[in-house]
View 1 (cartoon, helix red, strand yellow):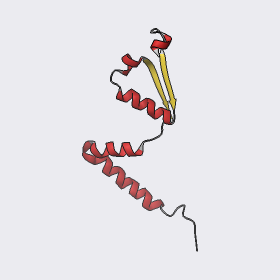
View 2 (cartoon, helix red, strand yellow):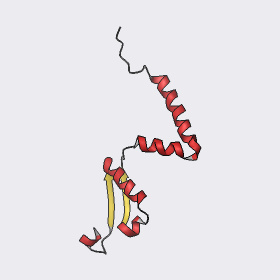
View 3 (cartoon, helix red, strand yellow):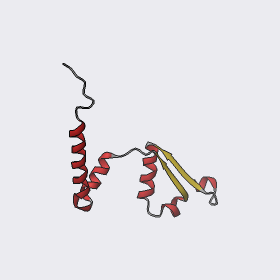
Length: 90
């Protein structure tokens, strides 16, 4: 963008929903993104949650403590509410 608009332009990034995920992945995966890409600021609005990636990362971080805790808590919630929205077919 700086090549197109000039090197003195201030760049801001705003992304919504799935675009928000792409922006966050770009910013997080780019070392020195501020210097290389030239973004002055970035805003992520209502980003979708990548359950698969988050689950894999949680499994291998902190010896799996987060993964085990979340699994236990999700199981409790599921067991408590599993019949809540089930229709009565009798």
